[in-house]
Amino acid sequence: MDSENKLGEYLRARRALVRPQDVGLPDDGPRRVPGLRRDEVALLAGVSTDYYIRLEQGRERHPSDQVLRSIAGALRLDDDAAVHLFRFGLPAFGARATASPTAAPELLRLMDGMPDVPAFLVGAAQDILGANAMARELYRGFARYDNLLRMIFLDPYAKSFYGDWNAASRLAVSNLRASSSQFPADERIGRVVGELTLHSPAFSSLWARYEVRPRTREKKHFVHPRVGELWLHFETFAVASAPGQHLSVYSAEPGSAGHDGLVLLRRLADQAAADADADADAEDADEGTTAEKGDTRS
Image 1: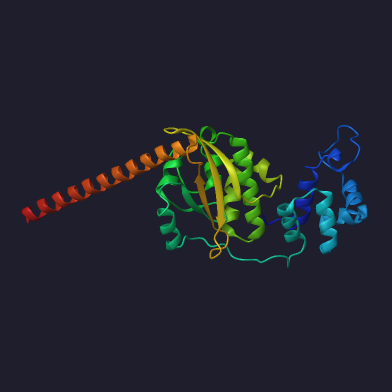
Image 2: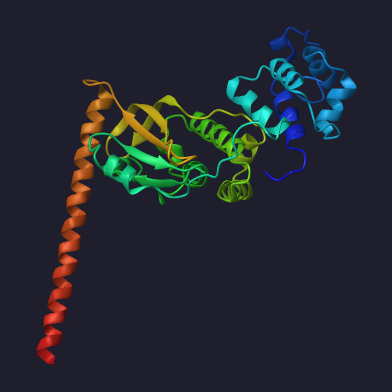
């Protein structure tokens, strides 16, 4: 994340994802490296090959707005990927807010007030900052419910929990890329990327693709060990008062199999809460008995 030529890295990674036929160029057979050549990007963007090479190599540090727009078009970048390009190419582009690392009590109360759907709050580095009982029950099979990226790439349970692990992992990485663009100096994002790069080749491969796609809404497929298959609608909401935080909620159409699954998940969450209360009462009773015995001995 701290390389000196982030713009060049991004351009090379995105160039490798574009096939000649995608942009109307002839396919001349196998290439030494995947994607477009630098002279082809320059041609499509309407700039000289020498200028584009200097841009990738970091010898040209001040591209104009117009040049970046042309390159974004040549590389077929969508809006989110183009914003990422502009943040690298124009340092003054966009706000440089600081990500909020903790959950506000009001948000925790809001999630607890949504007992029929899984709801959880994530930070810029995809740390779980808070969750209601339904969300904790949904993700109960993971050894730790702490960071979505770490859970997906480092917990073996993820491969059976996600109906399409490949799609889930790719979306998670592209979402983290979006966060890293918005908060380029965030230390927590850097630590998460460092840990996963060290321990997960799958993460490293996806991270190198530089795909940028913040999450908004998706159709999610889970396989819960007690509920079975769950097809749910996922919606995420940016928290305006806490930069980098998003409130994520799963729901299902009334009368659907997914809705029935959520009803069963709610029963399991209620039972888990009742069991926890019973354990706490038993522990309090044991402590009270111990204290009484101590008083008798005195």
